[in-house]
Image (tube, rainbow, N blue to C red):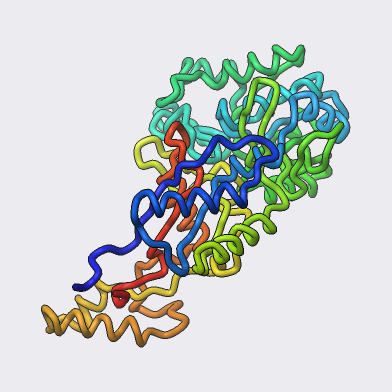
Length: 396
């Protein structure tokens, strides 16, 4: 009988991971035990994906608000700082903001509007249009913002982020002035010291401000080396961090290429199967209701085995059915499409037969699937096993 399933994604339950735990053994054993318990087989090119959270936790890769404050003060002088384009997030940015404020005397908090970089909105474009505001050119101070829009709260969290961020800053005995603008250079009307807090547009923001003579750093430059025995991330700094406590954040994992390679090798030794292994964080997808783009990490997958490099090379079955084989049906159509898949070119870029397939990195696609599978709450499945991802219609 022909195979009737394609890609399967399974959340794998694991022990609660603590600092110093042996992830090679834990991940390998958890996958094998799940297969035995649920009576499914493991295969070559299965993908074992591990959430970045348990990797960083096992590494003990944390830093404190005091560590952040010290690094900010050391790099930006400890006086006035322009905090440029932060995202509005209790989990992602609140503790960082406390650390930044603890390392400064005054903060000019410059928020992009009507939403932050990843789509968290406190206003809508319709509201801006109704008030005659052009977000590409108009700069609003806090008083004008409230006159125009009142005190809106986030649709899902119910949080008034303007008040919340002000309270966090002032709690650290730091002055606060809030500005709403979408041009990075606007901050130079207030201070020459800028901390660019955007994630995916940070290189451009830093470049623009440096060219105008500002003293500029990004979140990726803060905690990029250890302080007083703290954790750090030499490539991403504070980017990709998450709140651990009110005084501590978990940083994005570092130096984990040996880990994914070691897990791959252990799986091969224990199962005889050549599997791929990756570490993943946020998926790269957008919520149609809240308009939130999920990717608050700097990348979906910071570390992965070599077999996950590249993009898919797929033909579009519905294109073949509607065009090349529009006069066929039933078994003839099935066999013709299978033949086309088997004979497809090794590089389909620009070919009509691949139009509509997804030209994204494999790690971004698989990482997004894994993020949706594992969730971010109480499922208890920080490892995901993806099977059949590299199969196609011809595989039995």
